[in-house]
Image (cartoon, rainbow, N blue to C red; front, side, top):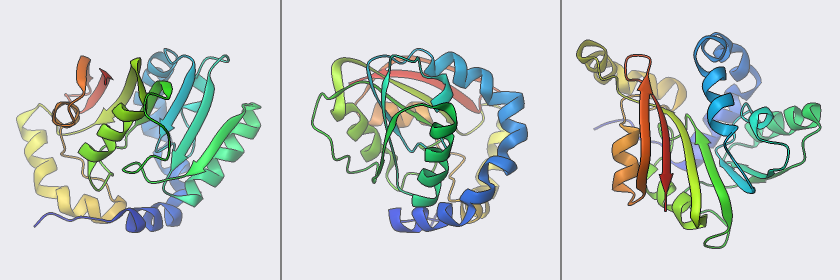
Length: 206
């Protein structure tokens, strides 16, 4: 059976690596993701919910007029994100919360965002359904995700190493973000891929 984690186990894992997370990921961020974060999350508007905020890497890219609420299951990650927000002088409502049980009303946010998170959710379909529930009917869900490569050799390698990788960082890197969005019952507005089909830039709607 594939390696699985509970939300509590994921919180514990990310609490333990929060202090070095940004440092370890710095190269990939600089080379691959910063441009996509700027482009994609710069499209957010109104009341914004970021699910699985991590260390707060997206915060600097939201337009100044956005009112941002950010949640994560890991207190360690939230603490670092809060420091980043303070450095940016950006007011953010941080809350410790499980993505599969969002404590917000239906149709509440204009924009719901998440990045590099469907790989870690214990049940990504439930989490995506929750994002759709709290998003307004005319709102948008902006996702920047990674998944199984469309290049056959790379995809097979990801499959072979999936359990080993999951044990290291609680990341299931061979999931298919596009299919998860569809299985969650969200409307897929757009999906483009880059980096050998690994990185997905997705817009969805409830």
